[in-house]
Length: 176
Image (cartoon, rainbow, N blue to C red):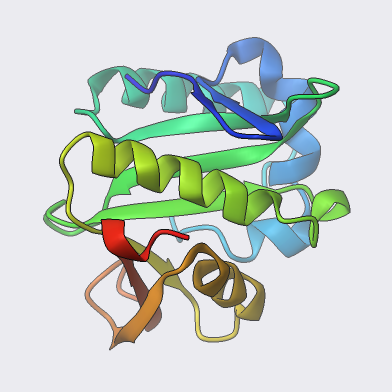
């Protein structure tokens, strides 16, 4: 189960069912949902968001450390601005993927890179020697964020999610 992670400006904490209303504007936004994994579409309403959160909370309880899912809140006002993940990549779960999804209103403020660094540090503190981020070739924002975190582009693959994806790798010495 994912514990709480703190950064200078953010608190990453486990998801709660009562986050559904605040999470809906993030996961229903078309410019966020279009980049989500094939297993997840845009969330249409609060009830559907609550079901998604219920699934994430149950999954989080079963995941071995350091894997997890976090709600991302701004520390100064407690506003829920997104989510972050550290999950085993399909098909075999031998690689660890970090990811982030933020409300479009907070894009460009460095929160995604800050959240990414926090989950990467968590993984490295738990003994992992690398984490990956994968992005669709047209998702320039995710690729730029991966580079800001200090990740190195290592190529393209169709190994994960049966999609052609750009792969970025981060090792402890590369964390900026």
